[in-house]
Image 1 (cartoon, rainbow, N blue to C red):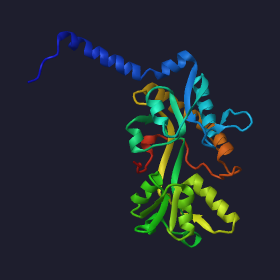
Image 2 (cartoon, rainbow, N blue to C red; image 1 turned 180 degrees about the vertical axis):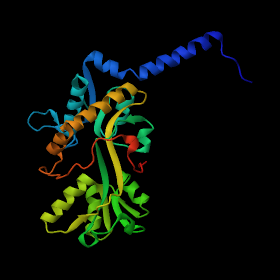
Image 3 (tube, rainbow, N blue to C red; image 1 turned 135 degrees about the vertical axis):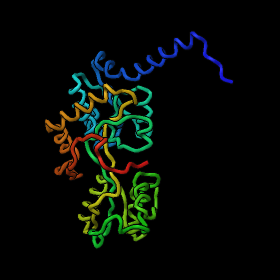
Image 4 (cartoon, rainbow, N blue to C red; image 1 turned 90 degrees about the vertical axis):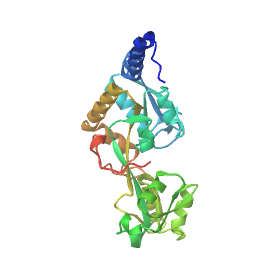
Length: 280
């Protein structure tokens, strides 16, 4: 049998709900009032954010993006180091306003936080021996492909209906390809580029399959309900894109003149318009 709420509760409940929603959506006002953006970045993951050996100050692509975004909001930046494991929790508990930590969109993360428009698209790519360079991921259906255990790379292998051969670390998964324990090795584009370039220097002929195994839009993370902040961050990212600032930051840390030798192909675009199959 259902019981009616007391009249006092019936009056107070809408007010409590309204207050809760206001608190959830008030981060932008908090940032403006304190004149500071609390930006979560990695504690030590180069080239995204890690201590400079000389100054011990955090430097990297994500650090520069935090500083640029704070400039768009008209406030100072306060860098707050986070670990890979705790970065989502630090955001959801309100210890940071935004998270810029090479954060890729996945279904599980989207259930916990909201994402800005992506500022680049990370790719899970397949590294193979050069005779297989002209193939596509579809050609490896049912084949053994290696990756690190529990990674998005492993997820992408399963999505392609191939057979994952997993290892605890990247080096072992890469070695599996060289030792013919797998016919391909799946990892993120940045790592793949490094490994292929290093192999070439040792006269080992490897190649990256052109078609990616999966797309991972990388964006700024925020708490759910912060719609005003989301709108402001998206506008800031677009202004940074149009002014060439994101390209300059990219080229400094990941571009053709760095050890990663990566070309930024996709620009800032609405997440809702991006055609991709999100990983779990």
